[in-house]
Image 1 (cartoon, helix red, strand yellow):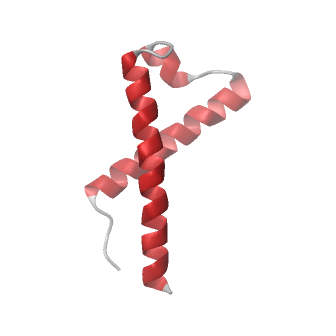
Image 2: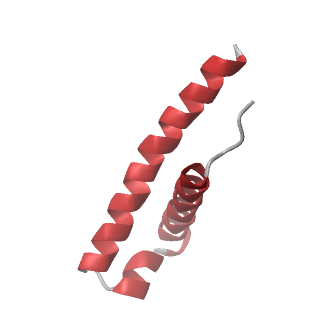
Length: 70
């Protein structure tokens, strides 16, 4: 099996960051991205978009890996 590329690892890291952020929102009502970069500031919106695009990328990566193992 082919190893993961740098882009794959970055996408996985962003998805993990997004998951942690949502966990904090659910448990503590703390949006860490908004706390660090401002509520819906340009930087916050870029982070949210990158996490969303990364989630789509990781979903496609999972299907691609799944097809290779079957």
